[in-house]
Length: 267
Image (cartoon, rainbow, N blue to C red; front, side, top):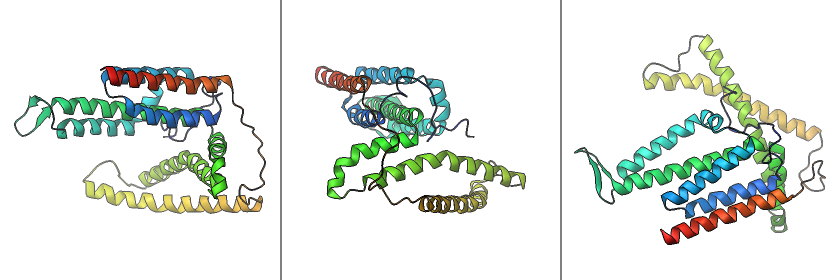
């Protein structure tokens, strides 16, 4: 299960994306999420797709690996496509099945929304796959530092995100172990009526929650005995350094946004 799951997983490598400053990667992803909504035609989404594929190629991670690890999300994207296609009722009728009609605008919106969703998932997954949780924490805290003047808990928020990302693979591994233990005792979670499957999930959730709370308590105790008292007065072992590649990455987003705006105005 751990080999297939990529949420919260870090893939060590020496690509140019791995070497980027975590602050640049965070700004890059958030900016990409914002500007992707400017795209409103096929050519703009083709440019966005080419840009995303280029980023994936620079990271050294294959698209096949991403798709394989994001199968549950792919199912959700497919469902979104189908729902949007059948329930958007604008434009000319393309397919008339009597009880259900597919409209031209429905197909268009289904394609755009699904493509946007897919590109966002790829780009955000690329962030966690190429950045360690501690680097994400340091980068996020550095970006939020100006908000400390208004008493914003930047360090605590960054720490919570880091812990959450760190424990996603751990909890998934714990789920896998509990499922195998239940199956070894004769529990069947993959067949039978839906009601029986839901009942079989209860014995899975109880030990999972118990183990999760125990891990949280152990982590809190470990932090306390090591003298953790928050972010005030703490020094950094890893110093963040901004390089030319980071500036170039953000500049590439400016170019992409310019392309989106030009295509939106001309087409």
